[in-house]
Length: 456
Ligand SMILES: Cc1cc2nc3c(=O)[nH]c(=O)nc-3n(C[C@H](O)[C@H](O)[C@H](O)COP(=O)(O)OP(=O)(O)OC[C@H]3O[C@@H](n4cnc5c(N)ncnc54)[C@H](O)[C@@H]3O)c2cc1C
Picture 1 (cartoon, rainbow, N blue to C red):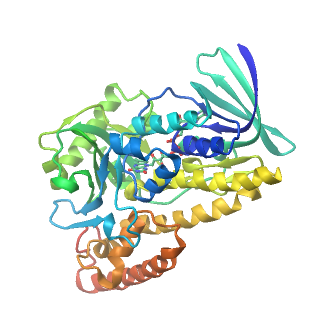
Picture 2 (tube, rainbow, N blue to C red):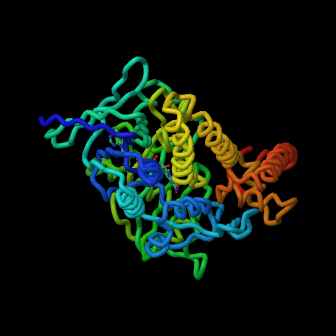
Picture 3 (cartoon, helix red, strand yellow):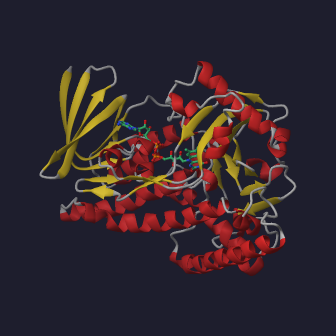
């Protein structure tokens, strides 16, 4: 095996949106950046519906025109109950901030390639097909890493000022340091595929994401430019257990935790497909839209996806994007939080380089700000699984501006001091009203929600 040595400013593990956005910021700051990516691009990834404030990040990176050319605009998120009789549409133009009324629905293989090309175009180096195997530690701090070419022909030892862990759910450092904590939600497993000929709404509504609540979880339908739509479901543990009655087995016990692996063939794929198809058949709104649809590849599955690290840095290394935390995807917050993290880490790194200090405390500002936004999303995610909150979510009127506040959260407008205080105030009010509504439901509706088929 050939031994190579590299000295650089920043070594990045992973070429997802976290790694490539960070690499672009740093390359612009004239830092020597090397990204190591274990897969070959383009590669499949889930995470296809993007939030409006992501547009500001794309603009900053200089890729907006390219995305506009390739992807369909998403002007709103539409939520419905299982048969579509109750619907609530949130056009982003109605958010507090009018600057970003849309974003895009994207095939991630394509988006991630655009972001990678942008990073290399700005001067970042990339080693594709290299898996980072270990971090190098000296005196209690990370000072580099070791990566091995997947064909076994080369081993690269890297010495750097700081390692950015952008390894996604693999969470390279967080897993090794035992920092990962589960976020306790009942819905933890997802099944998904791409379909052709799924019915869509006309005009500007064509690009809407459709989120459909049903008794055991929820579906997404994300339309791409052209004729393909991503369809997936996120289900509760108890529903997953019921699959045994359907004689479908438990695919997550077969080691399929990574959507990008090709290990989804054979019996396990049939089980995933059957489970997805059976649940679609029980959900009228989704069934109707998929009446003439054909599935493009066997359904894939990801289990146990919500977690958060106890901290987002260690001396000499910072965890960015999913490597720091991942929350349930119902509000499509993942890519935005990931790329926002990259922007905030780049800011902290400017100070770190100016002071030649790469200790964990240098990233405190990043951690505080990103945790603040994650906390708001987590409140909403937990709300989504609380039928009393869901009833308010589906309320048709913009009572006390609450619908505007929800729209702003759905747009991810969580960092702008001009709106944030107003938004936080309305969020508090929203949850206070949900508590009152819960009591009313218990008293006079036999504990049943008006929209969801779940008891409060
Ligand atoms: C079911 C589901 C649905 C989702 N839906 C949405 C959505 O609609 N909208 C949205 O915004 N987000 C969504 N997400 C979240 C989104 O997928 C992630 O937040 C986003 O991909 C995180 O980007 P990242 O760069 O941190 O990680 P990733 O995109 O996962 O990239 C990490 C990269 O690191 C590489 N890597 C890992 N380990 C190593 C190693 N040791 N050496 C070298 N390379 C390595 C991987 O190959 C990968 O390419 C969803 C997630 C799930 C689970």
